[in-house]
Image (tube, rainbow, N blue to C red; front, side, top):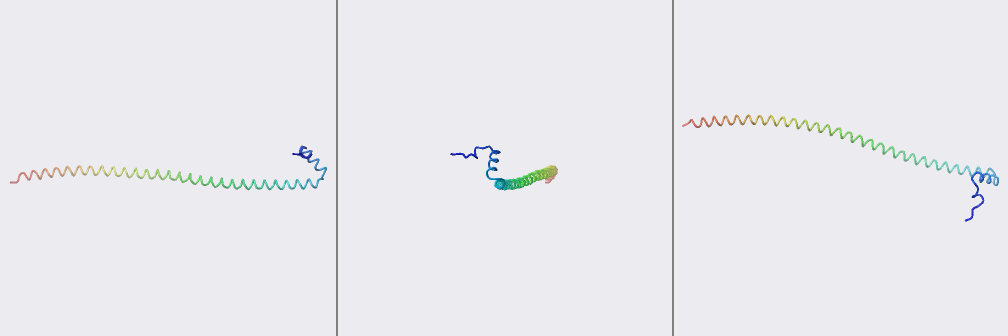
Length: 124
């Protein structure tokens, strides 16, 4: 592969050589074209970054929403657990009252049976 004389020159020398050969007008046209390409590239990069930032922002908002739902669920579970514990305490208290009432009724029943038996034994 052959290299041309312009390819072997360093960039500043190449520019000087090109300007001397072709004049400033052509050099300005080339620079303008390259600047336009550079601006297009930068614009595409900025648009890509903006799209990426938009996706990141959407993901961030989604994550915040999920975190809020988790926190809300934690609170509602605590409240539900407290309600259930309260119901358990009420049922235990009711069970204790009913057990005392049963014991009292069993005692009354035993006394009444004893009275009935005693009365039944006294009859001829």
